[in-house]
Length: 181
Image (cartoon, rainbow, N blue to C red; front, side, top):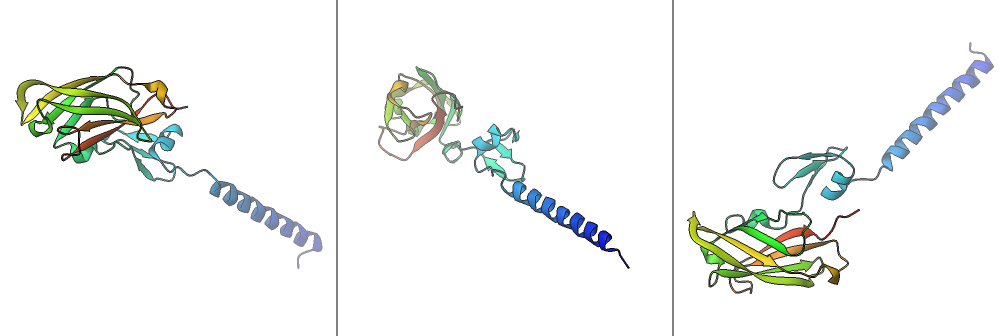
């Protein structure tokens, strides 16, 4: 029916197709998977303009930006500046609004820590006026901190309710100390 040479050519073509398909599957499977929001952004995938921001990778997986506990605390305290995951400078100016019960003697404690919890600087956020917006009062703080005392590229701005002890809340805002490469 088929000549011997036709059978050999058919066998070679089928074998080559199987090897090519196997290599395609193998190398496609070894593609590095994206596991975090930052990796997704670095690889150039699309970022949705949402809060918190979301990045969708090539596999269709959604990675959500870490913004600390800002969403959980938004009914008590909101920070306008700095925004989560932005590079902070020395000195750091912090501005926002907080409920009147967040303040003790018209102020509350602010700390800057590295990712390991080492305190790099501290200051006091002061109420700016008696002006209330739905029981929210404006505050600002200027915090001198020591970026040279850590090798970390990331850390937190901590805004502590009341006298600084955990008296009902600490806002943890993730920040960058310098650009990560």
